Image 1 (cartoon, rainbow, N blue to C red):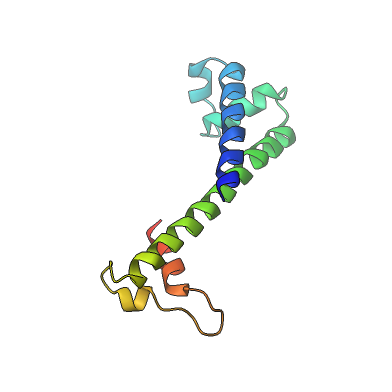
Image 2: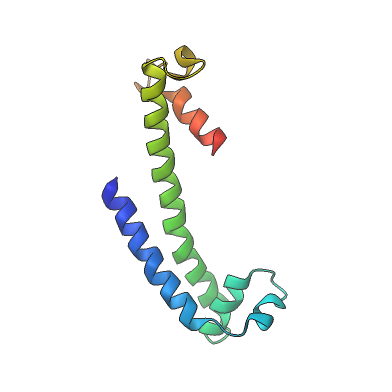
Length: 115
């Protein structure tokens, strides 16, 4: 899991540096009809190609989605451990392990609902 955070952080740093150097004027970015400044910048960086800008957006959103999954996995583990030690309200419900799946479903669901 630590390698996942490191890998996604490294990719995010490269994306931010690239994004800063590809940025056109701020006024034009804010006046774009799409309403998404990052998408306008991607269109300008890829010679106004909508398909390329969409692919670039998908490439950037995938690490964001994977980071969210890693975050929720870590949060649910910490929530389960705290509930198991009776450190949370409703600890018996949160710390209950599903017999069929052998995982703490309630802790996972709680972390997804809160985040």
